[in-house]
Length: 221
Image (cartoon, rainbow, N blue to C red; front, side, top):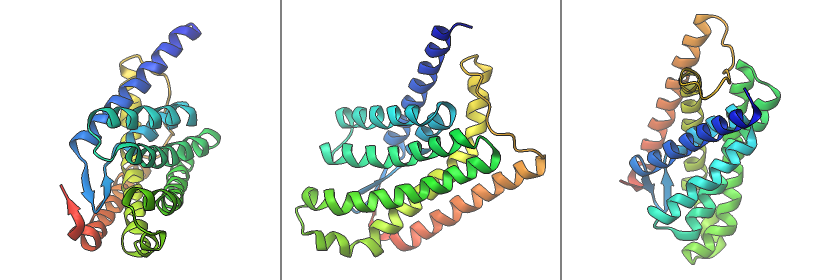
């Protein structure tokens, strides 16, 4: 297979993942105060796990740009924050997994992605949100323990669990279609695969429960 053919297939996979991420952002978003919660970062992260951090970065630019043109009500502010969130999550995952392509590497990649998103989005909210909302920075600082920290942490935890759940099936699906020869990490025993699936479901369910309990009163569908 020529390099040109490989590159065409790679671009096709990335384009499909961008389209899926955009559709998810349209179908499943809901508001938590002035913040938007969706699951597109899990799909964008898969592009980074498959093809490296640059692919994740490209998707992190394309999807928010399409949202800006079509569905966004937050303008340039939404574009910046969407890009930072998606890029922090996917690029971090891609960097870690690039050098540790294993079962434990995938889990480590997701853990580091959660930390990266939570940290970077807190800084972004401190420096960008005051201008968007027209409020003093002190007001935004006051929102950190009650809204910003739990929102970003829970959102990234759910996206991380979802990424681990769907990475192998999506990679296998592209392989069956002849679009990719990339293989996901080897899980080893069937028991470990079952434990991963159950663990991800439990983590996602627990994070969702915490989200509903502590932030449910500010949710707008």
